[in-house]
Length: 378
Image (tube, rainbow, N blue to C red; front, side):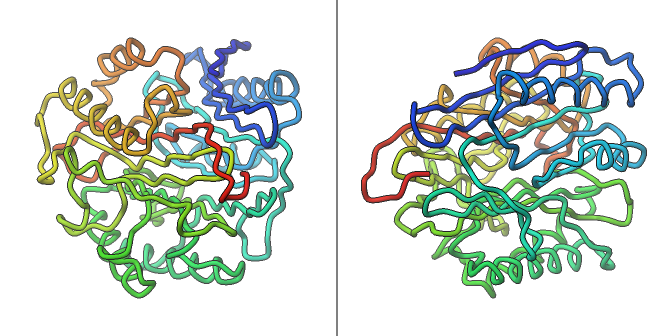
């Protein structure tokens, strides 16, 4: 179920997954509606709207992950960190909302779970047989993007080890944000490939669903930042990796190491995590160069093929994040999405994709009710 809610100078599009029993899940994407306001006024409008949301329509929920999209992190990130003192994993990244506003928010909320920050600095969400481990805005100040990313993954491996987990068995999703991606993405790729190999993640085993995209923190010396998500208590047979070989090739064919998508089955529901997906064919070639409309349609086709492999459709999608290299493409892309996906929780931001020829990329999360007595409920 999707609901659109208007507030003073802000709104929210909310996807609800509710089986009538067990944990309820919500994805909300919140926007400011008046781009003429100062940053402080926009931030206040967004924060006030969020408070009304959790006091009203989503009363009884707890936020477990938030991502703030900012237009100018150097002048805004510290303000957001101070204004939002809530206890959850918080990602704050400069990826300007392309509706002309200065701030937007994606928030994932649950009911009937226990949450707490851990000594490992991961954020734990516990229910039943599972512990969901979230982490956000991890960064360091090493000399270049390769060293920074290697340290980020090595630290994450140690954090997981503190919780009795491994990168290979438990990590479901990563987001890698790269400051000046055209310059620094090569180092990120090399570091990830090296760490994955040492952790038993290879083309013959599996990789991890991921988005590697342009984005930056407030400090220009931070060249890479990582958000991640792992599940403790999950079994191998609950995880299926998605390939859609009629439409996409293996990422290792062109030297990178991530999965196109991951299906995770619990006893009562299915989660589908679709990685950053662009206009690419099954030979690894960019399709429809310099045409953002045709690239959008091919991107949708690719995502649809991945969802279909997980026995899902766009109707099951809970949220979408769309990345544009060129902000002047916003009006036409927004119109395309509004026509096909009215009121779907969606944010369109400025963020360069890892190849200059890709004008657009999207990621999404889908949820579907299933019944599988072999697995514990979510």
